Image (cartoon, rainbow, N blue to C red):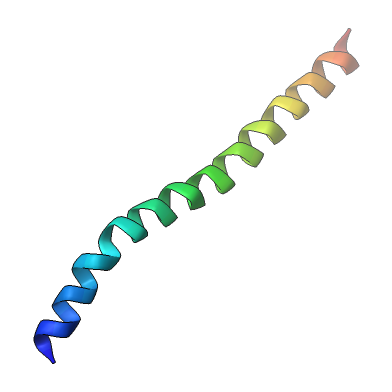
Length: 47
């Protein structure tokens, strides 16, 4: 039983790393896009 769970944890590690990367991309890309759009709108208002 212990051997099985240890192996599963080892197998899941790269997958978790990939999911973490995808998660951060999904979080950061819209965040950066939103900040960029907000700044663009602010510049339009002030010009």
